Structures are given as C-alpha cells and as structure tokens.
Amino acid sequence: MKPIRVVVNDKMQRGYVYYRTEPVGKNFHAEFKPRLTPPQMLALGVFGGRYMTDCTREFPADWFDDAKLCPDRHDPRLNYFGVNASQPLSVWREKGWIYHEDPRGWFQWYCRFYMGRRCPDDERQIKRWKAVRRHLAQIRKHCRPGDLQCRRKQRQALLHWAYDSRTI
Image (cartoon, rainbow, N blue to C red; front, side, top):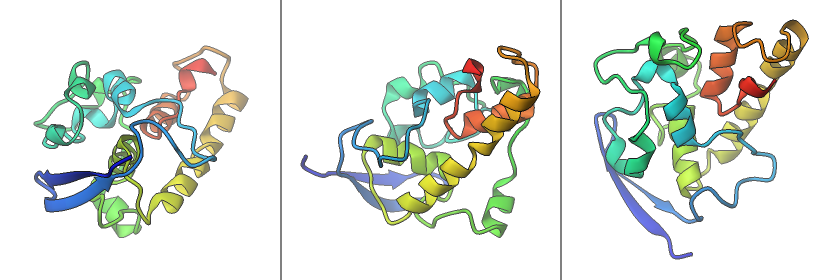
C-alpha cells in the first residue's frame, strides 16, 4: 500500500503529519482484537460526547453520522451507560499515559491506528488495552448475564477501550 500523508490541524495539534501505511481496519497486531470500531464507539456514546469534536476532518465523515457528541462540555448522559467513567486529561498527563503524538490519549491513538497509522507507541498502547480486560472478569463475576445495569461505570470504562460488555 502506498503511504497516505495526513496533516492534522485542530485545537491540540497544528501541522502534525503522520502516514497511514496499512489498510483501514486491517493488519492489526496479533494480540490486538478490539470488539468495537471507533465509529461504533462514537455512535454508542463515549467520553461524554466531548472527545474529538474539533478534529472530525481527520477521520471519515461517516464516523460522525451517528456519533453522540457535545462540543460544549462533557455530558455523561451521552455515554451509553449514562455515567461518567472518564478521568480528566490532566490526570492522564500526570500519570505519563499520553504519547506526544496523540495528545488526546488512547482513543486518538486507536482511531489513527484503525485508519492505518503505525507508530512507536503501538506496543505500549496495545499492552494498556490488554490490561483493561481485568474489568471484564469483574463483570462476569459480579453481574448476571445481560444485566446492563450492573457495574455501569465499569462497563462504560470498558466501552472507552473498545470492549463490548453488552454481550456478557
């Protein structure tokens, strides 16, 4: 595949350039098997609708057709489970979880990875994604199958990491 050059100009990045070197949604790392695509996550409701409202031009327009977005503020009612399961970006920065090329965090990394970008941070982000699986075990242990009201905050957090707890 011929690399596709992407130039990003939004509120958090000006003139950032990266290349898409893999086909969209393909050639993922063998251990990285997200259950949801970025547009599916946006349509279900993640990050209180506040995430990525100023950078829609970077991604396909149809990703945002059904997205639950709120450009003015974080609104937990827009989340699929109706609860806040997010930490402020400042906490992510303090903990060193933000890669300099993806100042919005994991979901930005995932969107770009899904679109075909590969970068030096891929292995770390995939390792972080795998670590979130422990929450699936907690839901299986403490919730009846199909009870989406059980552990809603934990379920929303899983949704933020492309895990779909609705099937548990």
